[in-house]
Length: 242
Image (cartoon, rainbow, N blue to C red; front, top):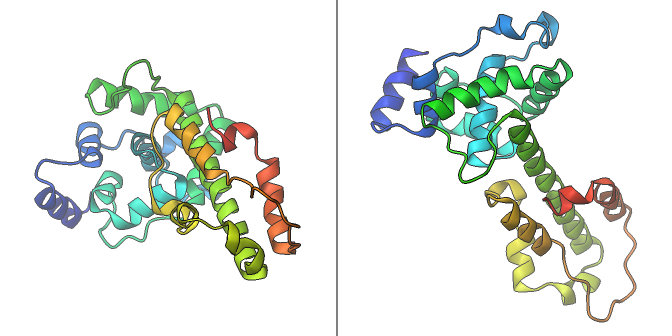
């Protein structure tokens, strides 16, 4: 742990944050050698696999997509404290998290790694499942996957609308409402997704734009058509998560 990071974070958050409490309660749980099978020397990420395991759990706890979690590492001092990084560390690309999970699953290490972190956090009262909700590696991986798919589908739809706004404004303008502007006007990763399956299903339903009462001829745009493919090939459970 860099001395400056520890000193500044403890001074800034005297009561701690979830990231600080996890680091102080658990410390570095893993040596990189524990991941040798999944991360050979040539394929090892720039950041410690053990640290990525902690990020994955905190990502689940805060309901973040991979992009949002990587942004937290860059922007938040307490996340740098969690990972033992210097305050000016630039973090990592969000794709590192997806690759990390894929490697864990490929080598059958997800239960060994994530369940250990989750168990330690639960024992220390740092993570609470809430009611009957499961808190294990399978649930964590599924929840994060759902969030990433929601972001992907939502951003695809937003990109299609922006393309239509440029290519066929006369067709799109009569359909646009104040609610559409609020919903599709900013990038998906600029806000947090709601927690809970029911509210996420409701969110997905709201995000599907209603067709016009009297449909006019749909404009043709190669770019907009290209966004249709990922939307149609994404499983419906990702478009309306359950």
